[in-house]
Amino acid sequence: MAQTSFELKAQDGQARTGVISTPRGDIRTPAFMPVGTAATVKGMMPESVRATGADILLGNTYHLMLRPGAERIDRLGGLHKFMNWDRPILTDSGGFQVMSLSDLRKLTEEGVTFKSHYDGSKHHLTPERSMEVQKLLGSDIVMAFDECPALPADRDRIAQSMRLSMRWAQRSRDAFGDRPGHMLFGIMQGGLESDLREESAKALTDIGFDGYAVGGLAVGEGQDAMFGCLDYAPGFLPEDKPRYLMGVGKPDDIVGAVKRGIDMMDCVLPSRSGRTGQAWTRRGQINIKNARHADDPRPIDEHCTCPACSSYSRAYLHHVFRSHEMISGMLLTWHNLHYFQEIMQGMRDAISEGRFDAWEADFHALRAEGDI
Ligand code: GUN
Ligand code: ZN
Image (cartoon, rainbow, N blue to C red; front, side):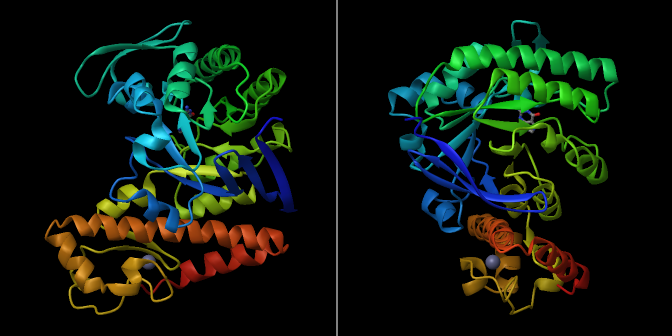
């Protein structure tokens, strides 16, 4: 018994809906994964995150290995128990965060040496250590250790980096071993070059993974270029395995990615922008700190059933934001996560019923109307 599986239930155009089953529960796809970098989705109790409709959270190897430390989390019973979330957790492997967050990085064939952005302490991360850390955390979906060059980068640099990531993918696979109940995903690289994406997909499928991520996108290339890549990249991957687009995105990015065959996504956007006063709605975005909300008795969105919209006015949310009250970030984060999960549920239903195009047209039409 593998104890994990992916069942595709329906497809409409390239858009797919299905279920990833794990011993910790099912993940309905397309799935949006809220980000819980430091063992918390900032400002949300885990039961509240669940109440928004999330089936799975994302955690970060890089942050947790530095603070509080993977061995400590293991001694305390693992990440699920530590943060009080008993459903599936996917962990990113650390390489991408080292390159974007740490100081004094040194990249070799073996791995990467870097200084912590918290305290300057020196650390080493390799495919083998990343697999060990993700095992200590107790992650349900483990990501292969990869590297992603900052864009713009020339083709040679992108090709070299992709091939290094593919050698690291093999080492990740070997180090992960056989762990029933846990899945290992490979990460495709190759920038915006279709032949490099194809080469990367071939290398990963030859190794064999439980799922496949599209990495190296949403790194400043813009939506048109990202969609251009997603027009072909998912097609290089096996149909019967989940496809995960890393670090995406805004609501229209998410919808466009699902339309092109993506099954899973994660992004800090709903939680991070909630803390800076941004609310995402079916009609677009509002910034609650704007003076025009100061006397507005209406909720953020009268059709939204989240706690922020059920019980609080824009005027109140404006006031607590201006007053730097903690409840401001809590309520806006809840609203944003609720809205993102509502998009996912809407797409799952539409794909099941073969009306994704109509759903997508409504999604864009309502946003174009604006008037929020
Ligand atoms: N998060 C966003 N993009 C990436 C990527 O290319 N690799 C990894 N590991 N994480 C990511
Ligand atoms: Zn709401």
